Image (cartoon, rainbow, N blue to C red):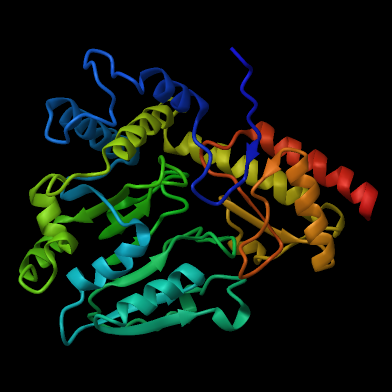
Length: 366
């Protein structure tokens, strides 16, 4: 058998998956053990798949210490559909939802929510090109708001909350797509958490929603005005099986959850991710040849953004790093520069290789 060559994948998503998970998928893809058919073929109504989904949910609950009183849903449409589902279910007529605008994905969520109801931007750092997150002191929250929406990690700009904003008794809704299960998570501080799986949990195709029961009840109250497939209560009542779910994506997510549990829990995963990021930030800050683009207090441990002195030098860095087997380092087209995404499955050895490349590049181009 030919040796499989794998490069280091710094892509922002879909992102690197754990090698043991890929190998298990490869081994069992043609026929699941004891089933005699591929996971791509089994019925979503079968006992086999019901068991796969139940195990995935149980592992999520155990890994993230999800309290009683929350539903875990496996939905479709990515975080982008949640931009519409959240206000459709939780923003009644006559009420206002507060949104914290700390980056490009927060801005997209605001744009979609405004199509459905009244939205107030509680704070924004758009005028600073989202180089930092709004501070607690900057938040102008609406008393009795329907909910407060935040984005825990801004993939494009490379910023991440270190502490959750204080919102009082108002339900806190978080788009955690790019840092869910990458560090300790206080689920009880949230009313709803949503995340596309394709960065830290699995492949593209499934979106995990962790929603408090009182918000499910709020969703049930508006089922006559919300399309069935967009109603949280419908999905909760049907255990995420109202329609055909993304069977393969749920199966792969379940394997990733078992891999994460084997890493020692959320705190251990968080320590590893912080160590990876700090190693790279140390190199960025070492001489000034590289410049981090996010304010230091808000730097993301998931998406490390930086640039060089000129756009031309940025271009050469991307070309040479790609040729060296370091893929996906080109920054988002809206901001340029570089972005190294260091999600859960990205190996520490890859950070070391990138640092070595950066030092060699600086010697040759500095």
